Length: 79
Image (cartoon, rainbow, N blue to C red):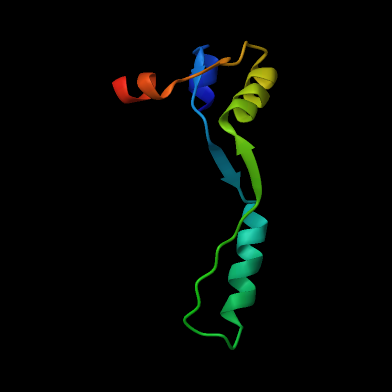
């Protein structure tokens, strides 16, 4: 993702990422290790960030122009 922004590509796709701090993951792992609840599954969720916003933040740090054109469904199927 960093290289994509660094290379100054113009397109981004809709959607995004969910970021979770590794310290939160470790905390959940630690707490569940000593829990009496067995055979459970957990979903750990953090901060949702769209690709557009993520690319804008990366570009700001690199001092380059971020991708500004959302790829259409047609363009995504061609790639």
